[in-house]
Structure formats: C-alpha cells, structure tokens
Image (cartoon, rainbow, N blue to C red; front, side, top):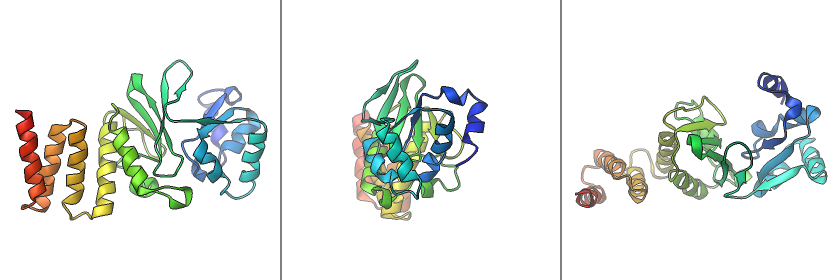
Length: 239
C-alpha cells in the first residue's frame, strides 16, 4: 500500500499521472491507489465487471472507490477498446483469473501486459497466483478460452504483474500456462492435456507444435489412438 509514489518518482513526476489502469480487482493491484490520489487526480480505468468486486475489500476501500465514482473518476473499458496516445494499445477482456481481467496489447512491440492472467513460467508461485479466484468470479472454463484467444496474438514480450518481464519468449509462456491448466484439469500423468493442447495448436495452424504435443501424449500412453490419428492427419495435410 505504501511506497509506490516514491518508485514512480524515479520515472516521472507523479503529479502528472493522468490515467491509472486496473488489470483486475485483487488488493495487491489496487492497494497503492490511495497514495497516488494523494498527489494526483487521474482517471481510473477498468473493465465494468471489476467494479463490483472492488467493494469486497476491507474499509476504507469501498468508500474510497465510491467517492471516485461520485466524482466521475472511474471509467470503463470494453473488449477491443484502443487507448489514445503515442502508441496503439488494445484492451483485451480476458476473464478467468477473475471475472473482470483485462490484458493490454501493444501490437507495434508485440508486447502483452498480462496482470496476473499470465505469469512467467519461472515464477515460483506463477500457477498459484494466476489460478481462477472464484470469490472474484474466476472460472477455469473462462480462463481456458481467454488463454486460447491470447494464442492468436503475436506476443514477443510479456509484462506480467508478478516476476520479471519475459523479453523474447512471451508466446511460449502463454502456451505453458494453457498446458498447465489442462494438466490441472486432466491430471499430470494423463495424455489428455497433450491431446487438448495439440488440438488448440492445430486449430491455430501450428502444425509442428501440435505434432510435438501428440508425441508427448504417446510418451504418456504409447497406445493412444487419438495421438496417432492426429499425427497421421497433420502429416498428410503438411505434404
């Protein structure tokens, strides 16, 4: 909750902050807002679904957000909105971790600011921090569909809400998160997560990736007919 303004001062004058964007409603992503509003009066942007979950925090935060709303300082994003500024930044509605998650995509840099929705695979608590929070409307089904959507983007750089930026292999981090989500649902010793991942990659046109997943499924179950059939089909289509 404290010290954020001091860190901002290393980058810019905090009094010049015009907009603050919330990726989701969790306390560690909103707790420093009160300190910012002591030195500046920015507009606060979020997905509309996020607003109700902010009232789940302890006092004085519900009153704080209520006051901002009365002052018309809270603004709402919807999926597909583009932020005005020097660069095009697209807003992507990606529910799953919470009901109101958004990611921000900068096409010119192939960069994705992902909040807690996708964290780097090397983060010690990455899977725990990004899992669905049912209290805040997070659902596994939504998470899977949102991860699939992110795989349709070119992502070189990943800017997560925890851990270090991933400079070169952001797309791979999204694939890892989706595979791990399948493994949580189906079991780590099952061939099913690999088959599900192969289907996703095949639908995206990543034939090589899909075949590799099928091979991993066969390592788990050497007699898996689905994996053999998919490899044969993908090979024939690739001729």
